[in-house]
Image 1: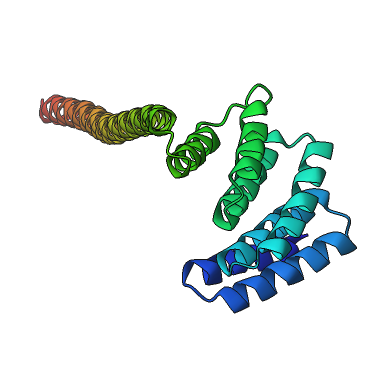
Image 2: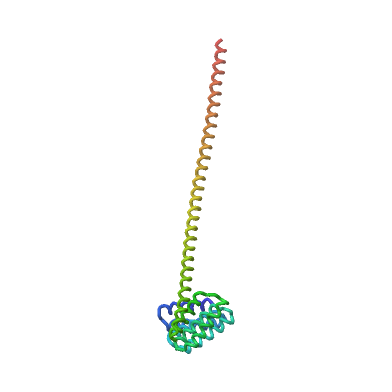
Length: 239
């Protein structure tokens, strides 16, 4: 499964840099691996990507063959978002072939799946396709209407992305602030700990110093007392 996914991802990279032949080769390899382990999600994805590559090369019949198999699997798995995407892709193919009625049929199928899986990106693409269909049919009113829908969705996506970015910035700010607070608390704890240790050392020092003073005082007192006793005895003997 990991190799199939990796092959598919590599195919996307080669597709993005314009190496269509290598991309198609990797998508086909990914499809082969996905079939061998019966990973239907990966099979549908690989077929959709293969269809896209054929569509780019204007091999429309091969593209439709791959897309139709892909969307069938996605619907069986109830992967409605993937099915919406593939229906739009089929509509693009028919639009490229000049079959506007078929293009409209499939884009309506994509829109029909919105109730099962609401996806603004694919909805926007559906309205873009419809706008181009009506434009080719010289129905400028409907073309403009769907272009307006497309713009509204793009604005919503932009606002959603902006809000997401603002939220992410706020989370980062709060995280950094908390980290600084924790760091400051740790520093304060270290300082307090050092101060406590220092105070303990001072207390111990003064305790030892006091004991030494008392000890010296006692020894001094006994020394003087002893001398007094000796002097007293000497005085008595002299008498």
